[in-house]
Length: 113
Length: 113
Figure 1 (tube, rainbow over the protein chains, first blue to last red):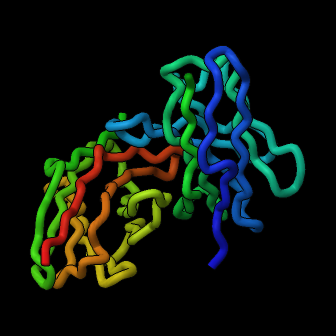
Figure 2 (cartoon, rainbow over the protein chains, first blue to last red; figure 1 turned 30 degrees about the vertical axis):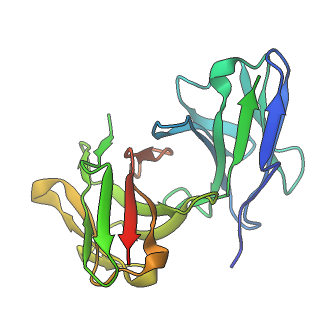
């Protein structure tokens, strides 16, 4: 069964540095998403992306964050000037069309020191 | 705004016993409802979904869920649990006019021999 793959599985970064989290969505999917889960808290929506533009974003997704689909297979989340509170598990997801289930990757655990 | 409540933080069940996980949602329109499972170190795997039609939906791994509009509930059930069902279970709600999923806080299931 096709999968969403995320790299790296664990990223450790110094506070203030930039980090890029990478995702390869399922190949024929058209909608892409990022979520995060801070330890002990709910999974939270960050952003959705379709047709090379952001279709929806949460209030969490401020100017510190950006997303990009640099080629036909990758979908990235960039976090600039990382803060301690950015430490979380970040999940990428994709769906074939908007009204279909989202399929999630295994996540990237981001640790900010 | 959408919201999802999973009243049970942790449930312990004996292997072979039945399991029911509760989920209540709040949403103004007809929701799309999902159950995801997360095993340790893994991503979110879709167990089942409800979009419309038959209110009793079957999923993978022997799980089923019933949508009850009058109670705003979407409870997950399994008649006989296996040790491999030990995991964290998340209920999520989406909608046709929305891109994001809103997740509950999750229920951790422990299976004892």
